[in-house]
Amino acid sequence: MITINKKDYKIIDVHTHLPWQDEYKTIKEKEQCLIDELKKNKIDSAVLIADSLSESCIGNNQECFDVVKRNANLKMVYGFTPLERFDEQLTELHEMLEKKEVIGVKLYPGHEDFCMNDSRLDKVFKLCIKFDVPVVIHTEWNWDYYPQYSHPFFISQIAEKYKDLRIVCAHIWIPRSIESIKQTIKHDNIFYDMSSFAFDDEYKKLYPKATFITYEKAIEILEEIISKNPDKIMFGSDFGTLKIDAHIEIVSRLNISELNLSKLLFKNAQKIYRI
Ligand SMILES: [Zn+2]
Image (cartoon, rainbow, N blue to C red; front, side):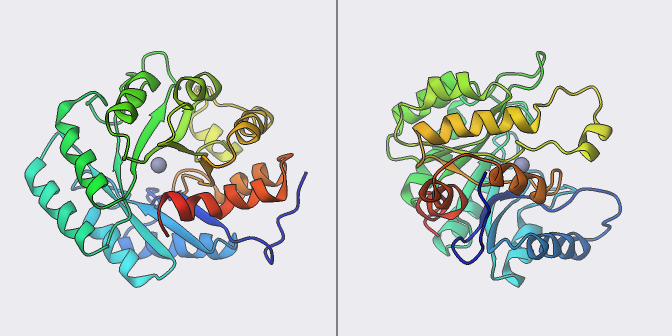
């Protein structure tokens, strides 16, 4: 068990969204909620990930960019979909990368109906390499019927083909993290964020049928990953849906060295996102 002494550590949350809940009616209200939450949890800076859809309760690219512009402690990841407005998005993304307005690109396979071996994505990977930013991929294995569009096999293929591309696997295929890590860890350009490892009681009430891991299991998985690969994993919460304090609680219960804690909380994020 470690105590997080804020004098010794910075905390960067690399995976946040604007909250989607109905009580926040406007983007301004969603922004305020996120900012308050970061402050409450003493988060120094956060990566705000935009949705790829033009109509979204977590904010589209333009809406999230407006939020990031108003808050110096936020950086933005661009949400991209290969399913619509392809050239339009590519042009917009190119411009934003050129102006350093975004620090990464997020893809949502599984939430959206495309697979990571889709050749349309090559253009996105090439842009990421050109501008030296990571591609962030939604990975989960939660449901038997959930399409395995971001299966570790596809991610390994991309890592092999594009050795200069940094790939961040968000959620580490929870709950099948250990087996997925085994299939991807040998690639130097694959990284992970621990967002959505803490399923709090409020969330469980909302989705009673979902099979989520316990805090104990999350701690066991994280300790196993960090002990072998301390440079590959970053702190993230998936705020908007899940809670930052619950993720901090899990981190505070990890049996890891101070050096590895600092890597998890901010040093790896600084390297991987170049921030
Ligand atoms: Zn997310």
